[in-house]
Length: 286
Image (cartoon, rainbow, N blue to C red; front, side, top):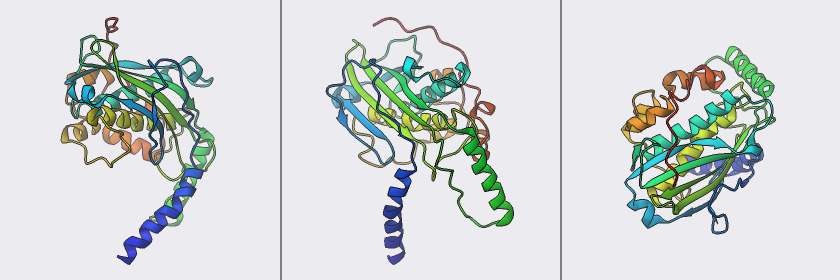
């Protein structure tokens, strides 16, 4: 009991330090949502968010389609290639597809569905590759000097990247049923650090996908309660296996073990993530 109490106290004392070492992620608006006036604040431990959800309509839905994520014009900073942006956008779509599959049947974007989901990147802060490389050098040095000693190696608290998003789910008639404006920055104590300008945004893509898909799966604030263990189908897909629904294959298979190793080593995500398999035809106009 004493050990548990001390552990909780240490966690609470460390929370300000964790938050101080986070990159800023503004909740920017690109104008793609139907309305911003009725969004309610719903922050998580690390993410800032505003949400709106029609619980009854969302829970009544059985099928969903995902319109590929795009970047708002203001989010296209210099120094990032179109290929890198495409990889981040696809990682968002893949995460959404796997998360939504927990309750909804995912259909191709060209087919009608009870819900249509579309996400937009509104801001993306670039990761400082040199700072990440320096962190990896320190990590290697620790492994050599203290072999077998489980001493964590925090990142240098500079040049941390961030990702800001907005997304909406519309019903078959085009009526907006759920929306989220979301922002989260990388922090120096958790997460994988990759030597890539989009390294942090790529990692945070999965966090956004988890949060927005949970909003639609439960019809409630995704930060209000802890998530249980993911279904077996999602674990298999994250390990690089086939997704629950074939429509998710449009976003390519997850890198699996190779991706995990890549994250630990710090190599760029494009080394192991092959991205989308093929572009689908655009969905019919609503």
